[in-house]
Image (tube, rainbow, N blue to C red):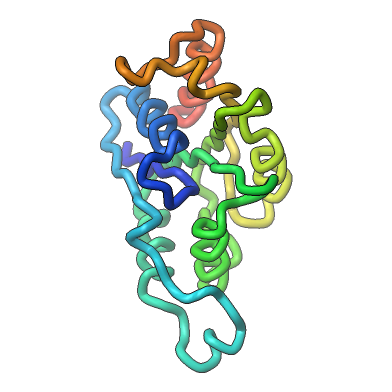
Length: 175
């Protein structure tokens, strides 16, 4: 199984990237490819840009990476209650190729933040809009208070309930 894992964040120190990679590690035998949204930087989407210049190669590359995967893990960063600007822009461009950006692939949405809500707003938004974008949503999980629940030195969840919930959520990709 080829799994694509990424954080919907452009931060180099992204805790969502740490979570996505950690979660992917529970899929034994899977070939995991990690994306960095910084590799897909492009102009802010506008219909004028699309008309004048077409769809950027970076958007096509992102869309193709999704198409090549058997399953996807996305950990959503929350910026002011919604997607990060970097992810939203890539997503907007990719949706111009095909509205079903996720191409009916099995997907797990994760989210975390330093705060007690664990990016719950963006996770709810993504979950509610998933059917419109070709997401075969297999599960979602929010990890609240990341730095209290994740051991940065060992790179692992220290909260046993959250650890079990993460393993269960990610295992749904195998079904």
